[in-house]
Length: 226
Image 1 (cartoon, one colour):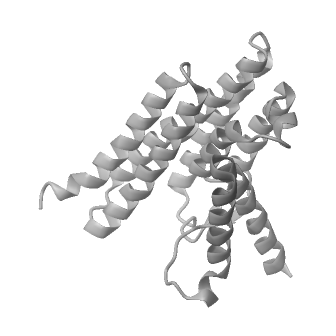
Image 2 (cartoon, one colour):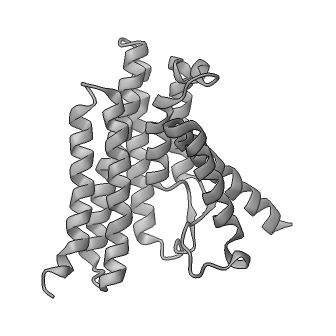
């Protein structure tokens, strides 16, 4: 069907529109930015799923996906972080460190597009994971408020998450070639623990799940070297 070939790109554009709306609504309520990032993640998942299911992958779809991700998972999280820092200290020049997230997101996406080896694992933190972490920290309460309500804490988080995106760190991909326990122990463990975290902490569980993802990836790397 000629119409079905446009479904993946239409879903990608929905991702992009979510990013644009999120940027627009941040001034009303910072949590709106988080909600729109989460919705964009859903569209980002289903555009790739639809492309594979309909066998309509294309070079333009790949490029369009990166452009949409740059807005929803690069610019929007930067704006959320900027708004969070501005709320603490409107006059601080350190507020602009939030845009290091956007800069490193662009670099991360560009590197991903030319690297054919990032199929079963990722090099550097993927931009959707970075966006989920950044937008999720606005929901963290005690005992994390000492960091999330500190201007210096948010600056460190901005720079740290940006560096993780462009680091040579190997992280496992959530791609199941089959559903056997032997081949997917790490993935099943992560999914189960993440569901428990989100069930326990609700929205605040999302950034904790991203931290778990990084820790499990580091653990796998150490064990594989041994």
